[in-house]
Image (cartoon, rainbow, N blue to C red; front, side):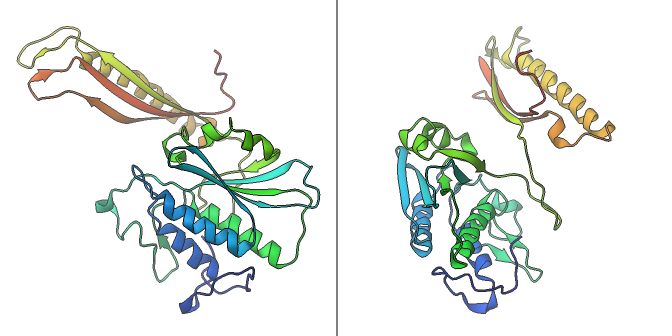
Length: 297
């Protein structure tokens, strides 16, 4: 969490906020209130926010529309030797959907309680990191620091839905190559204490949908070879493997979550009516595979 008490002035055009709240926290809460939530993220609001931040930081802002309505924004702090490989600070502007009935407070109110806890969708994934990037650059510039390399702050859309209309498309764009990236920082996991974990590897996400065709029929009969029977077999196979990996994690003293493959069934679809046996059903899984696993086997 960002500090709740007033710190030193950051300069660089930083706005002042009433109520004695640290300006970094206020900026964070402002960003959290932008409803960049799927399935209809308000990316225009995020772009207006970034326009203002770039102006405050006195940094050029480049916008590349990689797909219709999907813009990658890049602020560049030029270094003393721009020919060197650059540093990329990457973050995404979108957040996952909200089931408001399970929330204590409005998920986009950025409510802060008496202890300084902030409740909002995207507070951990990953709008806090975005603000940390912005405020770190703001503070360094206010201190008059000069860096050797270019530093790019990049803000991408659609990460939460696979990045197909975001980073996946942008890495093939000529503007990406021009960034001359040598080192990049992205998101990790939230920390529950004052100790911050540095991640040096990342599990490989596999999003798998299994399509199960079968014999249709009326719900009053025992139809052979149905889609649901195949679906059950697929589900059992994945969930059995899930249990094995869970046991590996729980019984090993040296394993952490990053050392095992997590498996979760996330979506099931199929059927049109109670009394109609469907001709097809789909089931989707989210797998996260450690870099130590040989994917060619």
